Length: 123
Image (cartoon, rainbow, N blue to C red; front, side, top):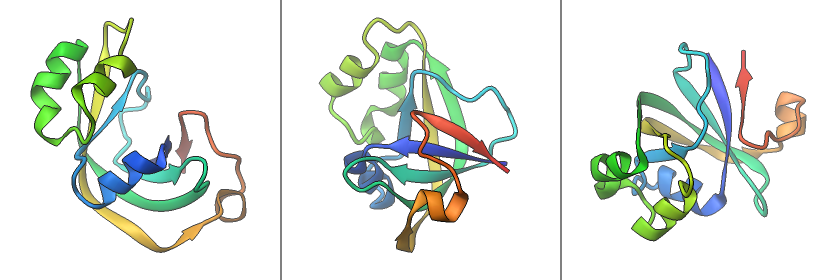
């Protein structure tokens, strides 16, 4: 099963150049059979740009997530803690086997859906 994630372009490009090995989320999918992520780069790109497999999903208090992921977080400590401000639990999706599409795709034409605010399941 796949999930479609909306990711800011600056972070999406870091995932696909290998410098960001974790995608951070305050809320994670309830389904446990998600193995792959389709990446929608949000505004101003607004296109499907690639996919990656999920190695594992780590959950925990933000301070513990930072300790475990900081060397490959792809973001600054300040930005990380600003994102998780007033949140007692966070998630880090560990990226593996990423592939960038040769040509970015329009989401409406390719999947027939509008971009999700956070994520959506794909069959």
